[in-house]
Length: 243
Image: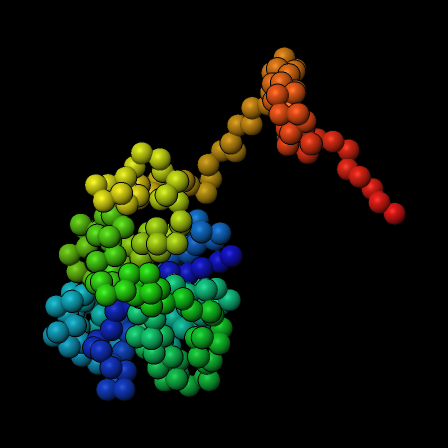
């Protein structure tokens, strides 16, 4: 299962008013594991960035002046996301901008939701935590994801943070952490320790003959004490074949 956690930064809030994407950031998950593979691109929007937007992400017009235009990066971008599930916080905003950029190109590109499935983590969070704040910053606080280094918004940084938030929101492992409860009885989510893809294979330790014999003796003792109710011995019995 390939998932792409995606975020964008823009010149303003409304593509209908001519606003454009100026940054795309994506990180890849395969089978819920961060692969280290990512896509990151700044884009020259051929228009001014609004002052209010600059206050949010800090990306200036001068910085974008020598960056490639969307038409120069669109093929690589589509190749990276094609066929994946996109994980986006407030997906209608980013998807609307991406589709707007596709529609501005001379070649007819399909809408992004026809080449990818889309999961909106904002909608997921609102369903999971109704009546509460569900911004990315609020979710970081709720799930104890460190975002102290996030002074300004940035597409790649926000995608990396959202990946951690998504994995914690959907992991379902907190209740298995015995002894890790807060004062209200809620399970405390522990920090994620990322394992690199090139890690060595895990060591498999097999029981020796003595350990196997002792195990069998213990199962037999359980079976005798329960009048033949040891399920582990029952699973080791020969299967019954019926006509």
